[in-house]
Image (cartoon, rainbow, N blue to C red; front, side, top):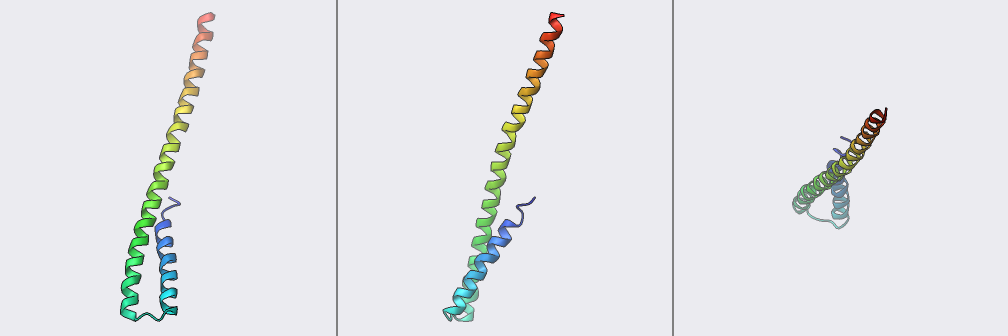
Amino acid sequence: MRRKLIPPFLMLFAGAITSITMWVLHYETKTMLSILLGVLVVFYIIGSLLKWMLDVFDKQNVVPEMADEAQEQLGETAAEEEGQEDS
C-alpha cells in the first residue's frame, strides 16, 4: 500500500533530471520530447519492478513469522497436553 507511489516518483524524478539536462544542453524540442518519453517509460517500468521485488520480499518475510507463531502455539498445546496426561 505504501509503496504504490514508488514508480511515479522515480519516473518523475528521472524525467526532471533529464529535462533540466537537455534544456541546459540546448536540445531541440522534438528530440527532447522523444528522449523524455523514453526516459519516463523506462523509469516507470524500473520503479514497478522495484515495487514488485519489495512486495515479494515482504511476503517472504511474513511467512516465516507466521510459521514461528504456529510452532509456538503447537509447543504450548503440546505442553498443556503433557500436563493433562500427568494428572
